[in-house]
Length: 439
Image (cartoon, rainbow, N blue to C red; front, side, top):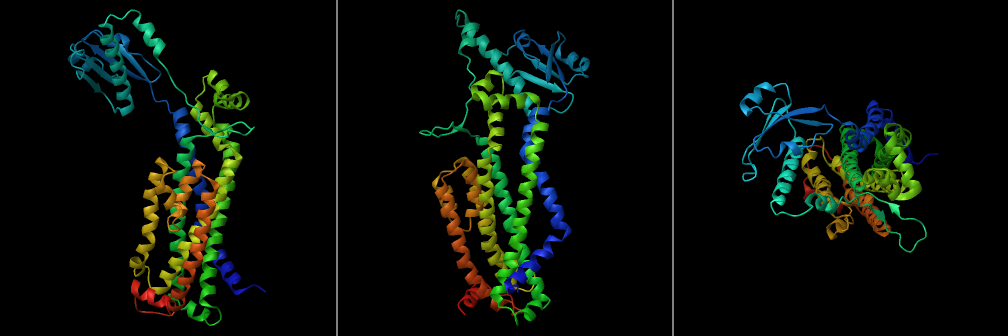
């Protein structure tokens, strides 16, 4: 025969899983998450806009011959005055005017666009002009073989990032700060969403059942503590099921779809990198940063650690906050009355997001460490640190503190719950809630 808590868990679980909203969010969220993960890569690979023609009126006769056209921008020099060129080339994307005193007055540059421009395009043109001006000024110093010297000293650095495994026989694993940062953002906001949405769901469920007098009937045969724990664990099972489905969908989609959407040259470079290392891929002209990001995402051990940690901190964080939300729901008669009591619970979640921004800049700082140990902020802050491969003992200590704190909080929440579910018509303040805990 099922225990009373088990019956309540089953009832809460079945009630939510069969809702259309659960099915829709479960299916749509992985699509949005995959879009957030792969959109920057795909945009950089495939976003080539229409080629833009720019007419150049160069009164100095110095800049225009040195401007380099590309697949996105084509420069065309014209001898027409700027007033006439602006009319004659109205069908071009823009007309670039360079004054005769550009060497003395570096700001004597104007661009007249016939459409919407962008910061990247303007920066590209400005950078080219700056390089020409610098070269022309260097020529005044009469340095022999100046072009050869400049070509010789030009150095492009492609730094490869690896996880240090000194003293071990296996090869060092690739790492990517870009991947870690993106995952930190996604995981932190996922925790933020779960703690708020599912916590408020528990609170609203308690308020609804209290107003319907269902709890008064149930309390005659079930202890208040069992009712609260059954409700919290039932909703927790829904959250875990949703995360597991997301993991399966996202992992399967990434495994099968990623090779199909990446260009052939990227897949060939990945094969070269796996077989011959980064140097072999660089010789093939590949972008090392992108390759290391893809290899890091395909590292099964790295992804398994993140997913396991996600389950641990989602469940622990939800249990902690759901107990407090259940206590608030039991002490009021409507969601409007819960606003004041709900604020102290919401503040630590919001603070965690602000700390997360600092954690991304320095995941090993003292601020990051201590906020990942405080139970009210550890779920979000720790999930922002885990993608950076912090020591395992820190994750373990944080998880132990989180679950131990849940036991303490649920003890106090149960005392408020057993008094609050039978109270009607009065909105208690923090002082009264404290008095209920001491009954």
